Image (cartoon, rainbow, N blue to C red; front, side):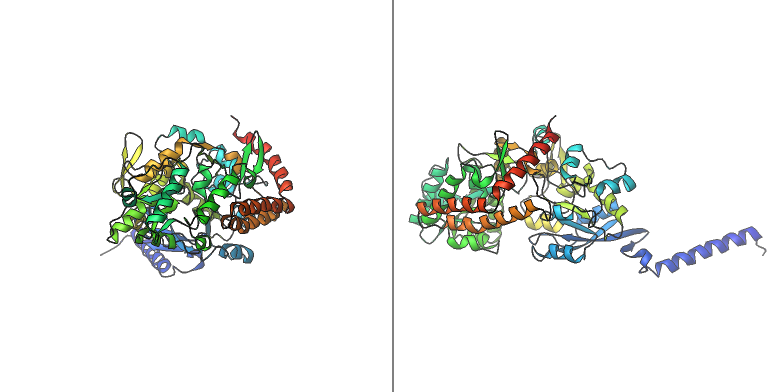
Amino acid sequence: MRIKKGLLLSLSLVLSLSLLVACGSNNANTNENAGKVSTGNDEVKELTLFIDAPWYPVSEWKGPIAEKITEKTGVKLKVTVAADDRQLPLMISSGDLPDLIFTYSQIDRLSDSSLSYPWNELIEQYAPDFVIDNTRIAIHTMDDGNFYTVRNSFATQEEMAANKYAIGSDGNPGIAVREDILNELGNPSLNSVEDFVNVLDMVKKKYPDMVPLIMDKDWIEQYFLQQFGVEALLDGWYERDGKIEYAIKQPEMLDFFKFMNKLYREGYILAENFAYTNDQIDDEYAISGKAFAHSHTVSIADTDNAKIKSNGGSHTFKMLPSALSKDAKIVSTGLGFAGTFITKNNKDPEASIKFIEYLASDEGKKLTMFGIEGEHWTWNEEGYPNLNYDPSDADFVNSNGIKWWYLYNDGITEGLQGYVPGTQKTQALLERKQITQYKPEIGLIQTQPDSEEKTIKTKVDEMIKNEKVKIYLAGSEEEAIANYENMLKTADQLGLPQLVDWANDIYQKKKELFIK
């Protein structure tokens, strides 16, 4: 049998190519293929991700959402969750950084060209179709003209107003109370802060072995600050008549402190609650039936009830109104929650920015936040997702990887995930939306790393952190007032007036970004 010369050459070429492919498959660990995993005919890039949140409930890239993201992007993540709040600063100091970092506490520090790739440069080079709106770019642009991340969970007032069912997320304060005990007390009124205190007093007298109010260590102040009309957390800024001032000097702040001190002096809260380092202690009190009221977030009634039921318990919680006071006010100065950085140690910046580009797409945001369309949710013509699961069911949500891979997302998509008709969380968030004002321009007052302002603010905030507990646990209202006045005096001595002058200069410049 004779074979033509041309055919013989073609067969030889096919055989040679096959051998080359086989050899490449046997050397998958060479430097050229580092960080890549072969899955059938598709090559998946593996990137390392550090999550700077010791409390994070998801620590492995697994489940249907992660798998779908990998299918769409060709990227899988090797995840490490921080052991504590000090780990990332130490990593930054040593230069031992992974490919990607997801953080809310070190955004200013990592927005540095010596540590991270500017997103704008990577987008221009590798992802020219990746469009980010001007407001988000303005918010995140640093003094060097670059932006290094875009935080998730952010939405403008206009975006929120245009999306009726975008009602916010679990990251908002709330208090739940025992329904059965309310019934036993004759269903007393709960329409004001004074009513709530009266009920706590009734609980203390009738159930002396029960803690009237237990508080999650990270959610001690927020709900009550808002009821007294305080417009910022203790370490934040507020605006009056176009001028910026530090929150501890807001006139309504003293009433808040006197109220918290009264809760302690009357025996409605525990002194040790202010020293908890474990965020599960308050849950144990509520679920086991040892506490009447549980201060945490807007989902706490739904979450507690699910846990109580699974443990065979019978008592249930219901949420207090989000506006328990006629003075209740919520001013959102947030610029979002956390952002993803592509570090200078990143082995594949092109794959990384394209990975983020997909997460920022409409498909990517919905996949991350809702799950797989048709399996976990369907779209309601009214304009929100019909979820086929309870978003308060942490076990289901976490095991499926829903929500927590929101390395890029926005407040609208996240807010839509919170809309579940008939749940207490949804009702609480709808109530909050009615009394919320958005002032992100205040959130742009940010001290820069290693600056004099940063040093002053750090000293003032550390002082407040220590001194506020002395106000809460004062033996009398007079002592609480004296401790509060001493806090203000000490803040001034630490340089707060200088910091306020600087903040006003920044505010006057930054607020123009939001003038239409």
